[in-house]
Length: 32
Image (cartoon, one colour):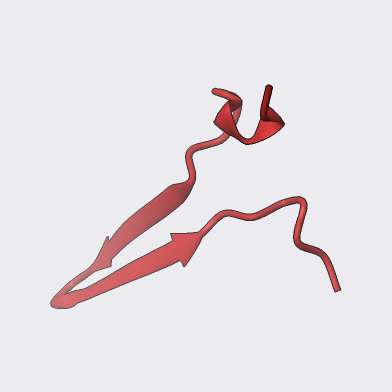
């Protein structure tokens, strides 16, 4: 079973700032 299907944090975060849409890919396991 994969742990990536966890429901704690969404995989993609979106934020609207005026006419700009910011999309953040949430990958907590992919650290530097």
